Image (cartoon, each protein chain N blue to C red):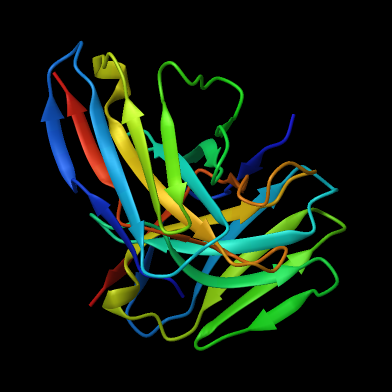
Amino acid sequence: GESVGLHLPTLSVQEGDNSIINCAYSNSASDYFIWYKQESGKGPQFIIDIRSNMDKRQGQRVTVLLNKTVKHLSLQIAATQPGDSAVYFCAENGSGGSQGNLIFGKGTKLSVKP
Amino acid sequence: SAVISQKPSRDICQRGTSLTIQCQVDSQVTMMFWYRQQPGQSLTLIATANQGSEATYESGFVIDKFPISRPNLTFSTLTVSNMSPEDSSIYLCSVAGDKNNSPLHFGNGTRLTVT
């Protein structure tokens, strides 16, 4: 069935280092992918998205890479800061259904050590 | 992006009772959705709240358990009926932009504990 999963459930990095959070997806029909950040006590916050006609997209301190060959998605955070500590979810739009039916991965907890 | 407000932000309820969660958006939106996030888990779509018609439920969720209202383009409610401890979760309202494949934006959720 459709599934979105993460290679690393937890990630601990030193402040200032770069972070890489990985995600595997199984539905080759997915053509839209999103990364969310969820801080404690808050809802998921949109970080960056990418469509399947691209393999890389950059934002402010963040880069998303999409490898459709191996169905892999990654989020790179440059110069990680304590404020980046949160749970990060990848999501895909699956093979159809409503626009709101995103399939979420299990989440990776990022801890930034000062 | 739209500002999404949910009430209550948290509640502790007794089993067998029902709780209605409200979601208010500061602008008119076509698409509104309700998600559930069980403790330590990821997010699962419950239903799409349709304005002027019955909500569309995902597999595993039924209207009798999770009745939804959508009276206008800025407001929706989700009721968790006849609650049991297994319903303890975060319930999240989300909205999408009008363009296809625009990202969902979420409220801060309602943290429900059923005792």
